[in-house]
Image (cartoon, rainbow, N blue to C red; front, side, top):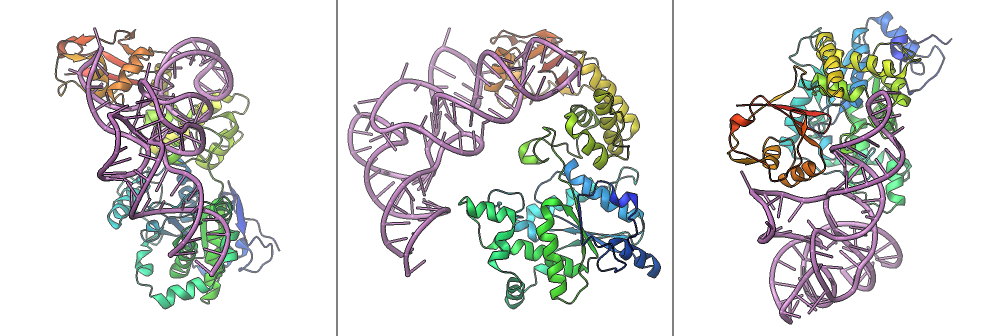
Length: 411
RNA sequence: GGGUCGGUGCCCGAGUGGUUAAUGGGGGCGGACUGUAAAUCCGCUGGCUCUGCCUACGUUGGUUCAAAUCCAACCCGGCCCA
């Protein structure tokens, strides 16, 4: 008897397995949910993150949104900080062996992750529910992985074959193309799977690229005599380029830490083709919202996403500022200020640009000037040898690089 | 362990002794255009308060007037054999 899944759960789903329609709570998630409700035992929803970088971006946040939805439905989120596995590196989606991180780096990253997820922030801005008792468990997988001894590691390795490992798309591609695969990388899916055993997970969330690893969790749970978890996979969010997945290394991300203006102005430009995905996965709006007017649609989704992070007021202000910036106005109140205090005068114009951090190097700054990309109070700078003799010449003026970068010069 | 091929700028990839930061592509950044964007076209793409001076072709040393290009050792990787 196929009970329906609740809409909050189905929204944006890419894959769910097993996807049985029966009344068997091991095969049908709907049945499992019902059983849990009857027994008043919340399900344990596992989500693992590897603290390999310092910033969480919107691509990650779709998983946290779903995890939050489970929390709000009364279930227990088990957030696993992969402090141990991060040091191996997840081969998923990687075309090369990942650099191994030090324990200290991993710790620092883990802390910033939790902060970005809303630890210590007002609950309405927090991505996860950190406050309601029983709704969140944060675990580090070094708790159980760091203490494994060799016989245990061998037991894990013995559950899988080289053929099975090579069935994983990423491994297969790398093997086929002659890209090196280190043996320790085979350990990664096993350890992630063992995490499921360690926390007795009922359901694991992940991106579609996690299918192999989530399935491995089921195998290992079965091996250790546990009830296998469900796997619930969400799509990989396309990045701002609309083609490749959102990934920091591709530079097509929006970070959760970004300011309202930066966030809004990136999002209002997402390609029309991915607007559906963004609306479905990152907002609570109807995905059909504003479909007749693509431009309005972009603005609506940019506003909604920015507001979920910064509040509606800040998001609206960002929207107004963004409009001003594009119109070539630089009167927007949120133009950041840059102090001239540290600049030794006399200063050449290009030196100013690099010292203020607008350009990565003074050579780049000269090129930008040559290319006509630099304006002072709206007036294009063209003279490479232009030199300012004192800070007072510049105070209060607005320095502009390209269309998007503005800085107001202050003493 | 043996054999063999290879390691070039953000990435891919030319270049095998002699102007030149080093062809080309991708990406990125600027300019024009546009409903933002994309596409297209144009310019730039090692650093330096720069008409010049530095640093660069896995690492270290060597040969040479001169090396990314030759030699040696070492490190890393692919393939074949064991």
